[in-house]
Length: 307
Length: 308
Image 1 (cartoon, rainbow over the protein chains, first blue to last red):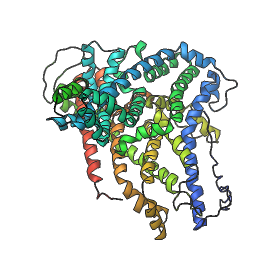
Image 2 (image 1 turned 90 degrees about the vertical axis):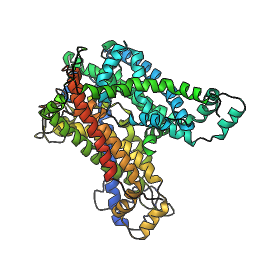
Image 3 (image 1 turned 90 degrees about the horizontal axis):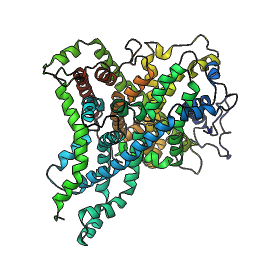
Image 4 (image 1 turned 120 degrees about the vertical axis):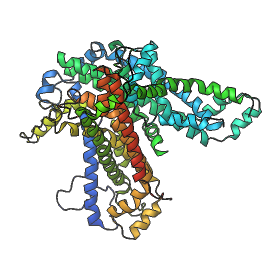
């Protein structure tokens, strides 16, 4: 990971104004003295927080390349050489490969399911008048503010009775169900903003409701689907509480659980470097995806709160 | 658009609604019912016991501790996180110096860089973040204490998560660390939509930065702040506090119940102690707290909506 420290202003050592910061020889127009001091101060705090955010991540990456004795001896030293065997050990011995596979399966299945089912429900709720429409809508929305843990106690037995406990497809169904409230909320608002004329035209031309939805409305809703898709992807990829309760079979563990499990078991085995390699392994794909799709991710995650 | 309308509606709603009803709505209803029984979760037999569980809860010292901690989470966390985020967002968007020829209000240099970096923790799983910090807090070999030793503070070596009076704050700090970036980005988007003329007018009237912030930016952002507060509070009462406390603390919930929160207590009663009915009772209390919290924030925060 690269930690570029932008041209951070050197905290003014003397009282010199910070004219150095500006590459171009422009001079501040007004209130230069007060403005400069404040500017150094505010910029300084921004830099400090940036360092505080990045440091733990850098520390984790560094630690994942060290051997156990130097992890404990000198936590902040650079690795003497890059111990790639930590990563290999974590990937194979510590079952990280299985956890990755399970997570990809669960998140892949539930993401597709959430988007398909969520957009179907949202479309109907946004575009059709029928008795009970508002009730169903608020039933979905209500799920956003209820503490999930309350439902998890009976849910465990519901899932168990259906024979879905500790199965990948059972977890997928539960993930979908708990992702629906936000998805329906977001997509209902989105479908309402789309023009009605296109769908009406298609309908007049003889397309069925179903066909209109899949061939006309879904493509039009693509930006909304991408936003809510990213939101759900991260939420489901990072999910911890649901699998902790409903997925207790070690072979079926997803990444987050697997790592916590690893932390417990490595505590006994004393393989800390392997654990850190696992942690970094789980962090990097998401961070990399974030850096690449930065704008979409930010939009997707903040879209809901801005509505 | 009448032809086959109802068949279509039913066809499209049946699966999502069915799934939602089965896995979300039905368990919620059940758990409220179970809170009036003596169900253990281990055997299918149980009988109604009226309000016994609720009476027991009121006498349960650990329940009161978990309630206190949960309330702290719901009040302190949003307060600290949102204040920090507002400050950062203001600095990033409005804190820049005025340059000749440029717009009157500008962000600091590198503002987009800060937004990208601050957002990092938000994409990570809270479970991974919690694990990372559990190691960083390790008193002997963790990053925090060795950093303190490194800068010459050998005498300051707290036990962090092992110290009952510090553990809860350590856990909260992790949640602040991971959430601030989200709100910085959220508030930045809000601040960017404030028309520049308003800032120009404020500057012309001689308002300093602090005054601009409190008299102009904050009132215009109030809606966003308020919904952010509710959002963060619900997370802090539920899933997020469960993950950090369960992963980071000894016990979990220790030392000496100093970090236990309601959501963790529900989990432990149901899946560790085999007292499912009592767990749902605490869960109902958590539901009441959550709804009351949301209602109070919405009510206290109600102001005249400012149009711009």
